[in-house]
Amino acid sequence: MRSLALPVLVASLLTTAIDAQTFTFPAIADATTDDSQPTVNFGSSPRLDFGKQFVSSPFQVWFARGHVRFDLSGFVGAGLVPVRATFFWYQSQSSAAGCLDVSVHRVIAPWSESTITWANQPPHDPTEISRTCVGNSFDLGWKEFDVTTLAQDWVTAIAPNDGLVIRDPSESTAGAARPGLGHSRENGDPTLVPYLEIEFAEQFGTGCTSHSLVPLLAVQSGTSTMGETLVLRTKNLVPTSNVVMFFGLDNTQWNGLPLPFDLTQLGFPNCNVLVELALQANLPTAPSTFVDLAIAVPNVPALDGVSLYAQTFAAPPQSSLIEASNGLGFPMRL
Image 1: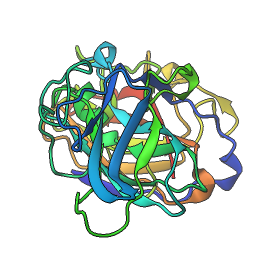
Image 2: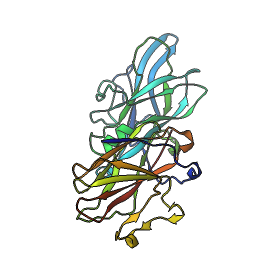
Image 3: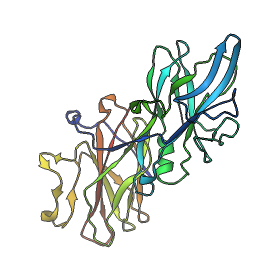
Image 4: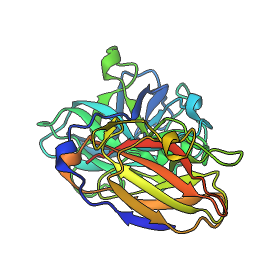
């Protein structure tokens, strides 16, 4: 797999619009489980709490976990891969100044909002997906958790979607306590329910081919967060084709030419340039019907929210024609 570190592109193009497909999924189930009340179900509570809990008189420490699930069934198997997924939860209360981390984990068994308790809660993967600091009395409001890897597995059906759980990372009674105290989906204000926001790469335009299958460019894995790696895969290639991928910050014009630009007049019928050809990456000869390119997303704050566009061109062996993929656009995020 080829890897490419993308330099900063032309600064004058930083006004490019965001064309990624963004969707919001409110929680369809959420519940707190509380180890001080191990057989009590809180599925209908207006609260979704988690982390290390405490009372000062008499002093007592215990733990709560927050379980949340979303319905992504309409996107499973659709060929789209999230490039960014963020879980949002509204912190409405706090216990003191300062915050402590809570961690997100994959739930690995089914559960029901109306029956889940601390005693019967489903198992979860001990591997942390992400952490966020919560509990600060001076910082109420929305808290964000990066759950991109979870959403990718759910949408691509790599793993069942049994939701996520938020908990204290160590669940040790030692040290301070700053629990996350906030709203569940039953809180009474639909604008403050927990939700998942997913950004998918935008696939646009159509490619061209000299054989039966049109090359398809899509996200294979990774995230478009700055400083991280995104893997792009071009499929439906003729084996041993020479492959080039182009990148730019615009899909409406290229050097003053409106896009798409028809290549028929250059002897390549039904083929179009769909993106600005600002940066070229020569890939290894395709060993089979697909080739991957891993790109390091530029860590440049000025590019936050700007979409990067890509298109693949291929020259099949023993052919005077070229093949082109669809266009692909994804937002770069801090």
